Length: 73
Image 1 (spheres, one colour):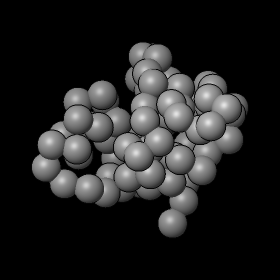
Image 2 (tube, one colour):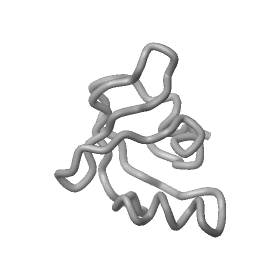
Image 3 (cartoon, rainbow, N blue to C red):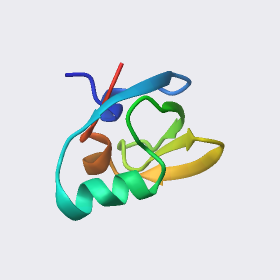
């Protein structure tokens, strides 16, 4: 399974599926990260946390634990 956590800087990826449930999944969806949306990886902190992404024109920082729940291709 390829997740956003493994993404490299400069990649544009399509979200395939969101894993997790309840409040965690809702928090991710509230950021505008939903199935079939494109995510551009702008920057990854030296230790991999947080990951800075662009989604639907918005610049976001996402935690590594949350990024691991976002399946991409």
